[in-house]
Image 1 (cartoon, one colour):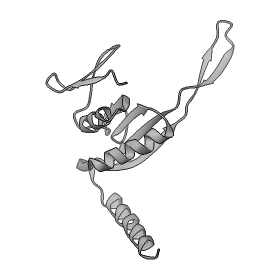
Image 2 (cartoon, helix red, strand yellow; image 1 turned 120 degrees about the vertical axis):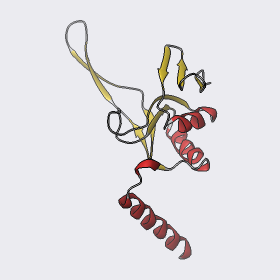
Image 3 (cartoon, one colour; image 1 turned 120 degrees about the horizontal axis):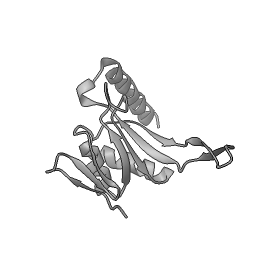
Image 4 (cartoon, helix red, strand yellow; image 1 turned 90 degrees about the horizontal axis):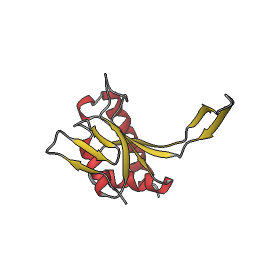
Length: 141
């Protein structure tokens, strides 16, 4: 199912049918874990200033159910998932007669991780509040 592989010894390079692309070292563990568990990742970034994303992000193909399973896999490996998204994008192109054509791309999934090096008090406070709400809800059942 997955024809992509990681070669850690060679500067963290991703081998794809179309060539090689470097993977940010900080996001590599998440990419490896997802690939080892059968997810077809196609884009990743460690996030931050000078990067394509603000937050560490991995994008992969699959269904809505794959998105849930990927979240559970990441949690089992101790990766700190902030949120998951199912992404639908509409693209516009011109046909040969210069007529505008709009179409939906194949939907994909993305997982956004909390950067350990950028822990912020606000995120920690929010996480603590959520954990308390979950504990309280569980004790009232």
